Length: 278
Image (tube, rainbow, N blue to C red; front, side, top):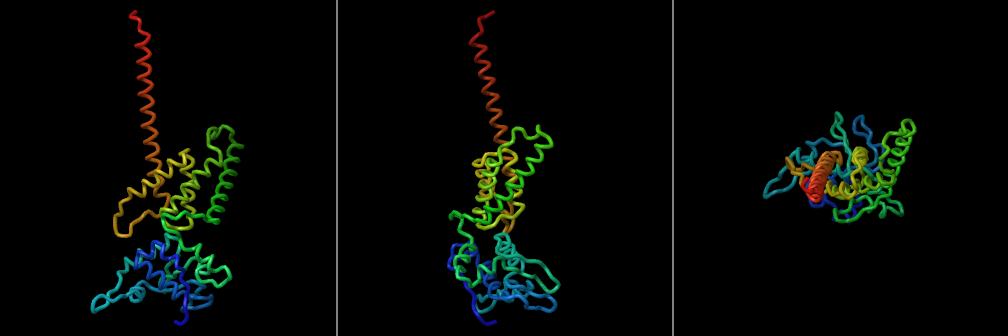
């Protein structure tokens, strides 16, 4: 295959740069992906940014020299790298009878040639964990979610005015959702939340957990996560939901106990103070 591809320098800041197999796989897919619609592999027609390949062939493609011989990468390792690229929002894939069809997401922004292609390309390399991120598309998704939630809440209140009388205002709920989703994406070093992540954030909001507490418990979930096997990682905000709720309600229960003990002590103190011996 002739020709060349573009590779932005910002990839040096990306997590996959420190993962040799994942970086080589990403580069391999970019190099071999169809650069225009219409390429056919038997009866499967590829679109721009797609590549059809079996894992056995990928083992051959990713073979590397070690000492005087060559060594193949294990299929399980390649599959973990594929899953990592999927979780980072870089790659999509599904199985066919001819092999796995890989789709490089936002291929046009990686390899486009418009006047603003450099700007577009830079936006699609996820920043490092310590770099703040602002993404207009994510902001719009959150805005749409808030609008839909607000409409649903309004219908519910109209049908039953007594439901959720003490529920927080929409803007208060949105602040918790945005804080959770933003911090989750920073911890994952990825750009776009999945619908199930936004749903999990909304469900956490409904528990009236303050944004700062929700974010603190989210960070604790990542800090205390123990991988069960190489490449094991947190893949959804829903995974952290149970952890966040458990920590919040445990803390709330402890606070209630402290309050009850304090009230009991105050009551005993009052009784002693006004005990005149009769």
